[in-house]
Image 1: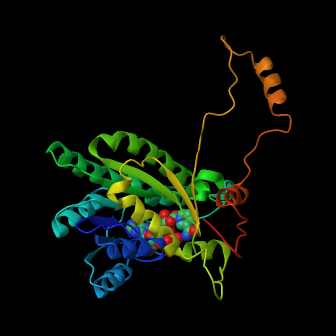
Image 2: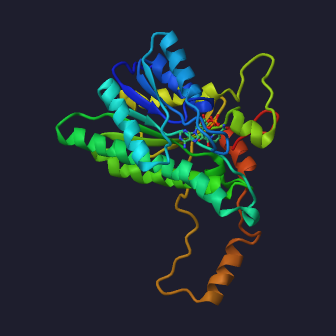
Length: 317
Ligand SMILES: NC(=O)c1ccc[n+]([C@@H]2O[C@H](COP(=O)([O-])OP(=O)(O)OC[C@H]3O[C@@H](n4cnc5c(N)ncnc54)[C@H](O)[C@@H]3O)[C@@H](O)[C@H]2O)c1
């Protein structure tokens, strides 16, 4: 395992699910960890510091260093306090893992304004706010002459990069996070910060609420174990990964696919403005069978190299 001793990490939404596994894995690799979790319900209501405190206790039980943090990641000032907590408690910050999330699934035609706003706030603003404050901290360190080797790892989703029916709010936020990752990677390279994102697949309360119980295999490899995501995070945090940035890692069991999204596509080029009739004719000729998204499940199967049947051998949100 890469040695992360001396490094300090924040993991948001680390009280349970995938974030908990990231926090445990980073601590086992030697990092000191700020275990952030609001302790909200799956739909984002309420607050409870117990899950974050339990993860801190687990880390301390194997000799690691951790502190609990109950800030709401979608609160700009709260995110600043979280970054400051890392620096005040452990003296520095090297790694920011943005993972906290909620779901309020609904078909677009029925979605309320509140359902839209709540999900965008936790995911998209909940990535922007910690990234913004951590970036300012690292820029400051870089300006004072420190050699910064910092990491941001964001959490997108197959729902965002492939587009899942019934998740307009969540998928839009997750697509936004993939876009934010691309921009931040380019802006922050000059300060020594890499920015990547995950598109995970795991058995957590989030996927079980969406797809029902996801059974564990009686023996053999459990492709839906949330701990399957964390080695990728630990590897990206190693100093040797300094030149890997702006990438989106789809992870499903033992399949890790570095996705290529919004690539240069089908060019319709001429040296003058298109006439609408001519463009339509060209469109029909180039796409005789039409053009439409393949959908998340089909794309997941292609990305993971095998069929991911919801509820049985795999599920995703
Ligand atoms: N489980 C999957 O298959 C899957 C797939 C794609 C993406 N994701 C993403 O992975 C991340 C982790 O999800 P999970 O499946 O572990 O879900 P989870 O519900 O088990 O964990 C999410 C955690 O985030 C915390 N949280 C919620 N709102 C918060 C806020 N405003 N501030 C701080 N903490 C907050 C919750 O209290 C919870 O502990 C999420 O971003 C999710 O969208 C999960």
